[in-house]
Image (cartoon, rainbow, N blue to C red; front, side, top):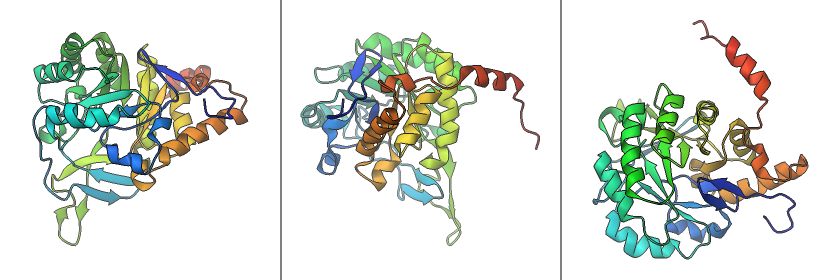
Length: 320
Protein backbone atom coordinates (compact mmCIF):
# COMPACT_ATOMS: atom_id res chain seq x y z
CA UNK A 1 0.00 0.00 0.00
CA UNK A 2 1.32 3.44 -0.90
CA UNK A 3 2.08 5.56 2.16
CA UNK A 4 -0.96 7.70 2.89
CA UNK A 5 -3.15 5.63 0.57
CA UNK A 6 -6.43 4.01 1.56
CA UNK A 7 -6.26 1.54 -1.34
CA UNK A 8 -4.90 -1.98 -0.96
CA UNK A 9 -2.87 -2.34 -4.16
CA UNK A 10 -1.65 -5.89 -3.51
CA UNK A 11 -2.54 -8.71 -5.92
CA UNK A 12 -1.97 -12.45 -6.05
CA UNK A 13 -0.43 -13.94 -9.20
CA UNK A 14 0.07 -17.68 -9.41
CA UNK A 15 1.42 -18.22 -5.91
CA UNK A 16 3.13 -14.83 -5.60
CA UNK A 17 1.78 -11.86 -3.67
CA UNK A 18 2.79 -8.58 -5.31
CA UNK A 19 2.69 -5.20 -3.58
CA UNK A 20 0.89 -3.80 -6.63
CA UNK A 21 -0.16 -5.06 -10.07
CA UNK A 22 2.42 -3.12 -12.14
CA UNK A 23 5.62 -4.60 -13.58
CA UNK A 24 7.83 -4.16 -16.63
CA UNK A 25 7.35 -6.13 -19.82
CA UNK A 26 10.31 -8.36 -20.60
CA UNK A 27 12.59 -6.87 -23.21
CA UNK A 28 12.02 -3.33 -21.98
CA UNK A 29 13.71 -3.63 -18.61
CA UNK A 30 17.36 -3.74 -17.52
CA UNK A 31 19.37 -2.91 -14.44
CA UNK A 32 20.19 0.54 -15.75
CA UNK A 33 16.58 1.63 -15.31
CA UNK A 34 17.33 1.89 -11.58
CA UNK A 35 19.16 5.13 -12.37
CA UNK A 36 15.91 6.72 -13.56
CA UNK A 37 13.16 4.92 -11.63
CA UNK A 38 12.55 3.52 -8.15
CA UNK A 39 12.43 -0.19 -8.86
CA UNK A 40 11.48 -1.00 -5.27
CA UNK A 41 8.04 0.48 -5.94
CA UNK A 42 7.15 -2.05 -8.64
CA UNK A 43 5.00 -5.11 -8.09
CA UNK A 44 7.62 -7.38 -9.68
CA UNK A 45 10.74 -7.19 -11.82
CA UNK A 46 10.76 -9.05 -15.14
CA UNK A 47 14.14 -9.54 -16.79
CA UNK A 48 15.03 -9.18 -20.42
CA UNK A 49 14.60 -12.59 -22.04
CA UNK A 50 17.66 -14.76 -21.59
CA UNK A 51 18.82 -17.74 -23.62
CA UNK A 52 21.38 -20.39 -22.83
CA UNK A 53 23.64 -19.43 -25.69
CA UNK A 54 25.20 -16.10 -26.51
CA UNK A 55 23.07 -14.25 -29.07
CA UNK A 56 24.02 -11.18 -31.04
CA UNK A 57 20.45 -10.39 -32.08
CA UNK A 58 19.00 -9.34 -35.42
CA UNK A 59 20.67 -7.11 -38.04
CA UNK A 60 20.34 -3.33 -37.82
CA UNK A 61 18.16 -1.33 -37.83
CA UNK A 62 16.25 -3.03 -35.03
CA UNK A 63 13.74 -0.33 -34.06
CA UNK A 64 11.44 1.90 -36.09
CA UNK A 65 8.89 4.43 -34.91
CA UNK A 66 5.43 4.14 -36.49
CA UNK A 67 2.11 5.84 -35.98
CA UNK A 68 0.71 4.84 -32.60
CA UNK A 69 3.72 2.86 -31.48
CA UNK A 70 7.01 1.29 -32.47
CA UNK A 71 8.36 -1.72 -34.32
CA UNK A 72 11.20 -3.78 -32.96
CA UNK A 73 13.13 -6.75 -34.24
CA UNK A 74 15.74 -7.00 -31.54
CA UNK A 75 16.15 -10.75 -31.88
CA UNK A 76 16.73 -11.48 -28.18
CA UNK A 77 20.41 -10.59 -27.80
CA UNK A 78 21.63 -12.50 -24.75
CA UNK A 79 24.82 -12.87 -22.76
CA UNK A 80 23.82 -16.39 -21.74
CA UNK A 81 23.03 -18.16 -18.49
CA UNK A 82 26.45 -17.89 -16.77
CA UNK A 83 26.39 -14.10 -17.13
CA UNK A 84 22.83 -13.96 -15.76
CA UNK A 85 23.72 -16.07 -12.72
CA UNK A 86 27.01 -14.29 -11.99
CA UNK A 87 26.09 -10.69 -12.75
CA UNK A 88 22.42 -9.94 -13.44
CA UNK A 89 20.91 -12.00 -10.62
CA UNK A 90 23.08 -10.50 -7.82
CA UNK A 91 22.27 -7.02 -9.13
CA UNK A 92 18.52 -7.69 -9.22
CA UNK A 93 18.49 -9.21 -5.73
CA UNK A 94 19.24 -5.74 -4.34
CA UNK A 95 15.65 -4.75 -5.00
CA UNK A 96 12.57 -5.67 -2.97
CA UNK A 97 10.08 -6.89 -5.64
CA UNK A 98 10.09 -10.57 -6.62
CA UNK A 99 12.23 -11.35 -9.66
CA UNK A 100 10.62 -13.04 -12.65
CA UNK A 101 13.08 -14.44 -15.18
CA UNK A 102 12.02 -14.45 -18.82
CA UNK A 103 13.49 -17.34 -20.82
CA UNK A 104 13.48 -18.42 -24.45
CA UNK A 105 14.73 -21.47 -26.35
CA UNK A 106 14.23 -22.89 -29.85
CA UNK A 107 12.98 -26.29 -28.61
CA UNK A 108 10.77 -27.64 -25.84
CA UNK A 109 13.74 -29.53 -24.41
CA UNK A 110 15.78 -26.34 -24.47
CA UNK A 111 13.05 -24.47 -22.59
CA UNK A 112 12.91 -27.20 -19.94
CA UNK A 113 16.64 -27.35 -19.31
CA UNK A 114 16.89 -23.56 -19.21
CA UNK A 115 14.03 -23.38 -16.71
CA UNK A 116 15.87 -25.84 -14.50
CA UNK A 117 19.12 -23.85 -14.73
CA UNK A 118 17.56 -20.57 -13.62
CA UNK A 119 15.52 -22.12 -10.80
CA UNK A 120 17.89 -20.81 -8.17
CA UNK A 121 17.53 -18.78 -4.95
CA UNK A 122 16.53 -15.22 -5.73
CA UNK A 123 14.30 -16.16 -8.66
CA UNK A 124 10.60 -16.04 -7.73
CA UNK A 125 9.02 -17.18 -11.00
CA UNK A 126 9.78 -17.98 -14.62
CA UNK A 127 8.14 -16.30 -17.59
CA UNK A 128 8.35 -18.66 -20.55
CA UNK A 129 8.55 -16.50 -23.65
CA UNK A 130 6.91 -18.96 -26.03
CA UNK A 131 5.61 -16.06 -28.09
CA UNK A 132 8.41 -13.93 -29.51
CA UNK A 133 7.59 -13.21 -33.16
CA UNK A 134 11.22 -12.69 -34.14
CA UNK A 135 12.95 -15.93 -33.26
CA UNK A 136 11.43 -18.45 -35.66
CA UNK A 137 11.00 -18.41 -39.43
CA UNK A 138 8.16 -16.14 -40.58
CA UNK A 139 7.30 -15.28 -37.00
CA UNK A 140 6.14 -18.73 -35.92
CA UNK A 141 6.25 -19.43 -32.20
CA UNK A 142 5.14 -22.21 -29.83
CA UNK A 143 2.16 -20.13 -28.69
CA UNK A 144 0.71 -19.91 -32.19
CA UNK A 145 -1.03 -23.26 -31.68
CA UNK A 146 -2.60 -25.05 -28.74
CA UNK A 147 -0.80 -28.36 -29.26
CA UNK A 148 2.69 -26.86 -29.38
CA UNK A 149 1.82 -24.60 -26.42
CA UNK A 150 0.77 -27.56 -24.31
CA UNK A 151 3.81 -29.62 -25.30
CA UNK A 152 6.39 -26.99 -24.37
CA UNK A 153 4.62 -25.93 -21.18
CA UNK A 154 4.43 -29.52 -19.93
CA UNK A 155 8.19 -29.85 -20.36
CA UNK A 156 8.81 -26.59 -18.53
CA UNK A 157 6.39 -27.47 -15.73
CA UNK A 158 8.19 -30.77 -15.12
CA UNK A 159 11.57 -29.04 -14.98
CA UNK A 160 10.96 -26.52 -12.18
CA UNK A 161 9.04 -26.08 -8.94
CA UNK A 162 8.87 -22.32 -9.40
CA UNK A 163 5.67 -20.64 -10.61
CA UNK A 164 5.64 -20.55 -14.42
CA UNK A 165 3.98 -17.80 -16.46
CA UNK A 166 3.31 -18.49 -20.12
CA UNK A 167 3.81 -15.42 -22.31
CA UNK A 168 1.41 -15.83 -25.23
CA UNK A 169 1.44 -14.32 -28.68
CA UNK A 170 -1.34 -12.14 -30.11
CA UNK A 171 -0.49 -13.63 -33.53
CA UNK A 172 -2.83 -16.58 -33.07
CA UNK A 173 -6.33 -17.11 -34.35
CA UNK A 174 -7.61 -18.65 -31.11
CA UNK A 175 -6.34 -17.11 -27.90
CA UNK A 176 -8.90 -18.98 -25.72
CA UNK A 177 -7.77 -22.37 -27.03
CA UNK A 178 -4.09 -21.56 -26.56
CA UNK A 179 -4.82 -20.16 -23.09
CA UNK A 180 -6.59 -23.34 -22.05
CA UNK A 181 -3.71 -25.43 -23.39
CA UNK A 182 -1.18 -23.50 -21.30
CA UNK A 183 -3.35 -23.87 -18.20
CA UNK A 184 -3.82 -27.61 -18.79
CA UNK A 185 -0.06 -28.04 -19.06
CA UNK A 186 0.51 -26.44 -15.65
CA UNK A 187 1.01 -22.74 -16.25
CA UNK A 188 0.42 -20.69 -13.08
CA UNK A 189 -0.41 -17.50 -14.98
CA UNK A 190 -0.66 -16.17 -18.53
CA UNK A 191 0.93 -13.03 -19.93
CA UNK A 192 -1.25 -11.70 -22.75
CA UNK A 193 0.42 -10.73 -24.95
CA UNK A 194 3.65 -10.13 -26.83
CA UNK A 195 3.98 -7.81 -29.81
CA UNK A 196 1.96 -8.10 -33.03
CA UNK A 197 3.89 -9.17 -36.12
CA UNK A 198 4.16 -6.19 -38.45
CA UNK A 199 6.39 -4.30 -40.87
CA UNK A 200 7.03 -0.86 -42.32
CA UNK A 201 8.63 0.36 -45.57
CA UNK A 202 10.86 3.40 -46.03
CA UNK A 203 9.62 5.14 -49.18
CA UNK A 204 12.89 7.03 -49.56
CA UNK A 205 14.83 3.82 -50.08
CA UNK A 206 12.05 1.33 -50.90
CA UNK A 207 13.54 -0.88 -48.20
CA UNK A 208 11.96 -2.36 -45.08
CA UNK A 209 12.55 -0.09 -42.11
CA UNK A 210 13.78 -3.05 -40.05
CA UNK A 211 16.86 -5.08 -40.87
CA UNK A 212 14.88 -8.24 -40.15
CA UNK A 213 12.06 -7.04 -42.51
CA UNK A 214 9.35 -7.95 -40.01
CA UNK A 215 9.17 -7.18 -36.30
CA UNK A 216 6.86 -6.71 -33.37
CA UNK A 217 4.45 -3.80 -33.10
CA UNK A 218 3.99 -2.39 -29.58
CA UNK A 219 2.52 0.73 -28.05
CA UNK A 220 -0.95 2.32 -27.94
CA UNK A 221 -1.90 1.02 -31.41
CA UNK A 222 -2.16 -2.58 -30.20
CA UNK A 223 -4.10 -1.95 -26.99
CA UNK A 224 -7.65 -2.56 -28.34
CA UNK A 225 -6.55 -5.86 -29.88
CA UNK A 226 -4.74 -7.19 -26.83
CA UNK A 227 -7.45 -5.91 -24.49
CA UNK A 228 -9.91 -8.10 -26.39
CA UNK A 229 -7.53 -11.05 -26.09
CA UNK A 230 -7.11 -10.53 -22.35
CA UNK A 231 -10.89 -10.52 -21.99
CA UNK A 232 -11.17 -13.76 -23.96
CA UNK A 233 -8.28 -15.43 -22.15
CA UNK A 234 -9.56 -14.49 -18.69
CA UNK A 235 -12.96 -15.99 -19.50
CA UNK A 236 -11.31 -19.20 -20.71
CA UNK A 237 -9.07 -20.08 -17.73
CA UNK A 238 -9.03 -20.02 -13.96
CA UNK A 239 -5.42 -18.94 -13.57
CA UNK A 240 -4.49 -15.23 -13.45
CA UNK A 241 -3.97 -13.28 -16.66
CA UNK A 242 -1.42 -10.46 -16.87
CA UNK A 243 -2.29 -7.84 -19.48
CA UNK A 244 0.47 -6.41 -21.66
CA UNK A 245 0.06 -4.15 -24.67
CA UNK A 246 -0.09 -0.39 -25.07
CA UNK A 247 -0.34 0.48 -21.37
CA UNK A 248 0.95 3.96 -20.58
CA UNK A 249 -1.57 5.34 -18.06
CA UNK A 250 -3.46 4.18 -15.00
CA UNK A 251 -6.65 4.24 -17.07
CA UNK A 252 -5.09 1.82 -19.55
CA UNK A 253 -4.17 -0.49 -16.68
CA UNK A 254 -7.64 -0.20 -15.17
CA UNK A 255 -9.23 -1.13 -18.51
CA UNK A 256 -7.14 -4.28 -18.67
CA UNK A 257 -8.03 -5.21 -15.12
CA UNK A 258 -11.74 -4.60 -15.60
CA UNK A 259 -11.55 -6.81 -18.71
CA UNK A 260 -10.06 -9.62 -16.62
CA UNK A 261 -6.37 -8.99 -15.98
CA UNK A 262 -5.05 -9.51 -12.45
CA UNK A 263 -1.93 -7.44 -13.17
CA UNK A 264 -0.30 -5.53 -16.01
CA UNK A 265 3.06 -5.10 -17.68
CA UNK A 266 4.33 -1.79 -19.06
CA UNK A 267 6.78 -1.76 -21.95
CA UNK A 268 7.01 0.86 -24.68
CA UNK A 269 5.83 3.67 -22.39
CA UNK A 270 9.01 3.27 -20.32
CA UNK A 271 11.13 4.16 -23.35
CA UNK A 272 9.31 7.48 -23.53
CA UNK A 273 9.12 8.13 -19.79
CA UNK A 274 11.32 6.04 -17.44
CA UNK A 275 8.92 6.78 -14.56
CA UNK A 276 5.86 5.49 -16.44
CA UNK A 277 5.37 2.46 -14.20
CA UNK A 278 5.45 4.52 -11.02
CA UNK A 279 2.93 6.91 -12.57
CA UNK A 280 0.63 3.99 -13.35
CA UNK A 281 0.88 2.75 -9.75
CA UNK A 282 0.04 6.17 -8.32
CA UNK A 283 -2.74 6.63 -10.86
CA UNK A 284 -4.35 3.30 -9.99
CA UNK A 285 -4.35 4.34 -6.34
CA UNK A 286 -6.14 7.59 -7.22
CA UNK A 287 -8.50 5.81 -9.61
CA UNK A 288 -9.65 3.40 -6.89
CA UNK A 289 -9.82 6.03 -4.15
CA UNK A 290 -12.03 8.27 -6.31
CA UNK A 291 -14.48 5.40 -6.76
CA UNK A 292 -14.44 4.08 -3.22
CA UNK A 293 -12.71 0.85 -4.26
CA UNK A 294 -10.85 -0.51 -1.25
CA UNK A 295 -8.76 -3.14 -3.09
CA UNK A 296 -7.37 -2.81 -6.59
CA UNK A 297 -7.97 -6.55 -7.05
CA UNK A 298 -11.69 -5.76 -7.10
CA UNK A 299 -11.17 -4.31 -10.57
CA UNK A 300 -10.24 -7.70 -12.02
CA UNK A 301 -13.10 -9.00 -14.14
CA UNK A 302 -15.44 -6.23 -12.99
CA UNK A 303 -16.76 -5.72 -16.51
CA UNK A 304 -20.56 -5.90 -16.71
CA UNK A 305 -20.77 -9.58 -17.58
CA UNK A 306 -24.53 -9.69 -18.10
CA UNK A 307 -24.37 -7.06 -20.81
CA UNK A 308 -21.20 -8.44 -22.41
CA UNK A 309 -22.58 -12.00 -22.48
CA UNK A 310 -25.67 -10.75 -24.28
CA UNK A 311 -23.61 -8.67 -26.70
CA UNK A 312 -21.38 -11.64 -27.57
CA UNK A 313 -24.41 -13.76 -28.45
CA UNK A 314 -25.60 -11.09 -30.84
CA UNK A 315 -22.17 -10.27 -32.35
CA UNK A 316 -21.45 -11.25 -35.94
CA UNK A 317 -18.57 -10.56 -38.33
CA UNK A 318 -18.90 -7.05 -39.76
CA UNK A 319 -19.88 -6.93 -43.39
CA UNK A 320 -17.14 -5.53 -45.61
